[in-house]
Length: 531
Length: 99
Image (tube, rainbow over the protein chains, first blue to last red):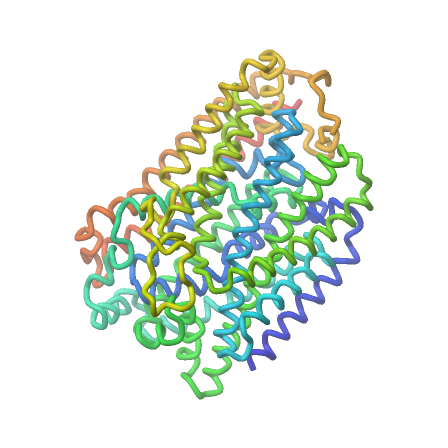
């Protein structure tokens, strides 16, 4: 039944993709659906981009196994949208056309910035994508009870996502995202209602049973995170990293105006908030109804908690209802993985085609047809690389890749975005230093952290750490150190570049950028003149 | 790439509405951002340094930690709503500034 439901979902999304393919006629259609997505649709799609398998399966499992500490992830991921809403959404839509690089080059007027911004986008998207692809492989093999191995699941997900993006472009990717977000919300709401009926519509009652089963410390903090600095560092990366994630940023270019960008963030916050609040119910109910041992028996990280909870809520193992619940949630998780990976793929291939191929290699002179063709080839390239890296990394611990993507986005992209928007003296040298320094320094800290360096017990055969030694840098997430250092790099670079600039011209460029960022003057169609 | 330093860059016309927009928007952005960061970081800081408080029961079995976490969600929605309301005024000023 799982395969049937998954096949139906894939068939529907492929149908949408072929419908969308007939409406894609230009490079702008491919990159950002011609900027024609409505605010509501885009809001649902942003929520879809964000509610990845890591959120749905991961957080439910984290709460089921660790109680309150798991829920703190939900809060951080939700609150991150305030940073996006207040600081980046509207100015970005006003200044950019297709990518983050458009916005930086609009102000800084230096073609080198385009190359570095594009590389940063591709690097961050790739790390995020590998994590999703590897996660997809192990999850699908888990969910199919071993019938599909990771070696088959990774290429399967990769090929499907290539089809969505190559054939349907951004329009199809957006609709796949919307369908998946709605299925996921539906599944979560139904499960939460069933949980509420089981526990007398009382969260207190649910927590009481959690306490009776696990002891009082499960209701408070500290089961998972022992070191406060580690927790604060993680929260910092989550809350500041989202505003620099390429697949979230590219979504602001799919809507017609800055007002729509703002409305779509608000829509996303309503959906994401409702979803994450429900994770508190699902995680705790999974703990009570299934028990920690059964959840860990299915998957040590707790990734099976949500599907097993659905099975239990719909009647239990062996019943028709239970089987349907399990199959439905499994199929939704599959759709989730596909949609998120497609969203990442399009941000990476857009950056390559628009910024590197057209912007740098062709001096902005490539024809629409040419860009369209290269975008499709780039997507296949990005997809194949993701599949190969995913296969190579399939036995590695993947949590660090996601943390890495957030920390990279917060340390390399956010300082440059903020300085571009708000700091008069900021210049191209500062942007390049900020991006390159932020990326390299964050990578260095991650390489020295317990994510990569750890002595595993000899009995551990999968998920072994790359370097079997004690970590040099103690924190799992480097945010608390790498984010300030990212700002420092951008600052120092700005000072170094200051002498070589024409201060009066820089001032005029800043004024012009600011006028446009604040008022949206001349947003329609005029960005092309600056490419 | 047609970006060049010699491209005539028209410095936008200054007007009162634009000045007002920049001043109000910056003040608003800074206030809201600082407020939400401070309120948000209460959660990880308390979770790290005051575990007994987080585990204190407030309503029935609902602990202070859960109450604080749910309040963070309410804060997020309320601040988004405030922003939407304020943004209408910004939109009007921006419209005026573009004239």
